[in-house]
Image (cartoon, rainbow, N blue to C red):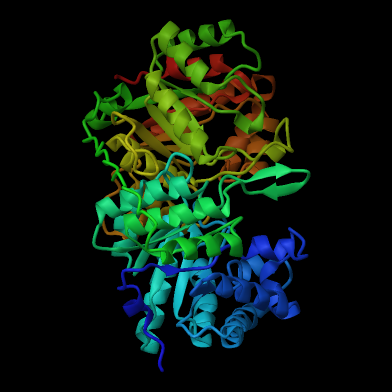
Length: 627
C-alpha cells in the first residue's frame, strides 16, 4: 500500500512525531565532538543507521537525515567539499535502509536536514548571496533526488539565509516538476527573539510569505521557551501548520561533558502542550534521545492523559512612527546650500582634554563651522570619540561629525553605540570602514566586523531613524541622524567608485567626506562620469578634503603610500623649493585649493597633519568664506 503523502498526513489531528538529536547520539557512541558528523555517513554508516532505528522503535515517524552540516563550506573545513552529493545521497539511503529493516508497519517519512552555511553572508560574513545559493542548490537537490519526503531547514538565525534556501526549493520544485514540502525552523534566544532580534510574529509572517509549508521552532533553551514562541506564532497565523523541536533544556558542562537537564518525562508532558498549541510536527533537538521520543510517543498515545490548558500569549504591537527630531546645523547648512567647512580633530592619547578644548576653540574662532572627531585614526589608541565630541559640544559650543568605523565592532555594540551617541546629541555621523588594526598600536586586536559601511548607513537611515533596531524591534523613539559616507573622486577606477557610491546613496547617505584634493579639475571629471553612468545630476553634498602639507617628506609619503592621494609634480616642486618654509607653503597651497573647489562642492573638510591645528586655523583665517 502506497505511503500517504506527507501533506495529507499533516492534516490529521495527531501530530507527526519526529526524532531527536543526531549529533548528541553520535558523540555518545564514539564520535569526537569536533569530528565531521556528516562524514560518518560514509565512514560509519551502521552507527547512523542504528540511531535511526532506535528513534523509529521509540516511536518516531519522521526521521532526519544526518546532513545538518553537509554543505560545501562546512565540509570544506574537513577537506570534503567535493563529496557534498555523495554524503547527502548516502545519508538518504541509510535512512531508507533503516526504515526497511525496522519491521514497523506504519508510514515513516524522511526529512532532508539542512542547516545554516555557518560561514556568514555579507554584510555579516565573507559569502555573497550567489555563493550561499549555489551551496544550497547542491545540497538540497542531492537530498530531493535521493528521495526525501520533505526538506527540513533547521536552526537558522539569519532570515536572509533561510529565504535563499526556501527560494532554492521553489526553483527545484518548478524546474524538476516536484511537489516536496518544506519545514522551516528558526531558533530563538532567551528573550524569545531570533539572535538578530526578530519576533515570533514577524518570523511566522515572513516564512509564510517565503513559501514554507510548516513553520517551526527548534533548538533554543528548552521546551518551555519553544512553547512560548510557538504560542505567539500560532496566535499570529492560526491557520498555518507548525513544528516544535526543542533542546533538552539549557546545556551545562560537567566534568568536560555537555549535559542536558530536561528529563524524558518532562518532554512527555510538553508533547501534549505542543499538541494543544497546534503543532503538526513534534520532536527534539540537542540533548534529546530515544528515551525522550519514547516518552512523547507514550503521552500522545495515552487518551487518558489530560491535555494542558494553554494560555495564548498576547502580543504587543509597539511600532513607532518616524517623527524626525529637529535637523542638525550641518543638515540645515547643506540643505540651504551654504558652503560649510569642517576640521578634523584627533582624540588625545590621555584623558586630559585641556589642550583639545583650546584647539577646538581656536578653530571655532578661525571660522570652522563643524569639527570632525576621528575614531582611533591610523588604529592608534585614543580617547573615545564620543567623549571628545561631547566635550566639544558642551565646552566649545560647536557641532561635531562623529566618525563611526564599522571595523572591530559587532552588531550589538554598533547599535548600542549609536543609541549612546544620540543620547549625547551627537547626531552627525561619518560612517567608514576604519583603519586596519595591523597598522596601529595593537596589531593583534580584534579586526573583525559584522556590517559594511553601506549596510550600516541603511541600518541608521531606514531602521533607527524610523524607531527600529536591526531586528525590527522598537527603540522607543526614532533617532534623527544625519549620515555621511566616504568618497574618493580621484580613484583610478571611477566606475568602481561610482558603483560603491550608488550603494551608499541607495542606503540613504546624506553627504560625503571627500579624499584630499590636489587636482581640482578631476572633480569635474568624476561628476561628468557619474552623470554618464546614472543619467541624472550629481546632487550629493560633498565636503572636499583639504590637507595642508607640512613638508616635502610629508607630500612624498601621501603620494606614494596613501591610497587615493595623488600630488602633482608642480606642488611637489613648490614644497621642495620652500625648504624650511614648507609648512607655510603648505598653507598657501591649501588656501588655493579651498578657493578652487568652492564652486564645485558643498564645502571643505580640512585634515591637519600631525595635529597641527594652527595650520588649519591659518587656512581658515586667510580665506574669507561667507557663511
